[in-house]
Image (cartoon, rainbow, N blue to C red; front, side, top):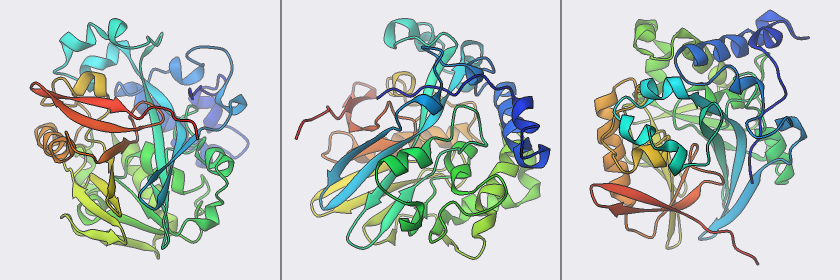
Length: 345
């Protein structure tokens, strides 16, 4: 199921909308900062990539499968585009592959389209949401998670646990409203200790490649949950029944993947150790320009992929091609991703 973008709307229009500058300002600044740091093309953020129709008119996107006894639902929040002239900044070691993108991918007129997703896992004990997208206040091209969740038949009140891979805006802003309220009123939010400390410390403002807007977004996303946040140690451990952590620092200091184990089946939901399979899997040691520590990000990517490559563990990821389920295998010096095929019945 394809994702589409919302109708034309500039960052300024967002900022001075009906709710006022203080409510919409983060969205406006987010869009401007994203463009400034090569994260999204302003033109792509204002128009649909393949047609004039917008996200609001599209069918909400969800896809369900099972992992052991758990029901897992992939939810699409939207997406963003890394503009062609920003790809070298985002993927500084991937010039050769970038030059071949028009033959490797279905081309987007503005650059490289990257989806933004989340996963809902329903077990006999918990209803767990892993990440929550950027919500409508990150970019005009995000904010479909709630519609997707509703289409899947799940009310926000049903979610009792939120696992955050990290606090970048397209992963965490979706848990809170623009006016500072909980989107998931009954949920406990879990985030790594290193991640929490990094974003709460003013001394780290200069260390964020995307700028201070991302710091403001991280803080705003978790603020309504100040009395229901649990920080977990940055080591491999079970944090919720059936869910264990796999630390992947580098993209951010506390970037974390989560392993679901149910019976003999397992699913690893990736933190941002992987943004683009077509660019990063053939050359997994290529750095990412928006990582806080690019060298450490490389080591985390290789370690994480090594843990699942060639095994029966399924893999999911917020930026994997929709609907974001598949398996990893080794392929020479790199890896290959095999998407789960659509099945009937």
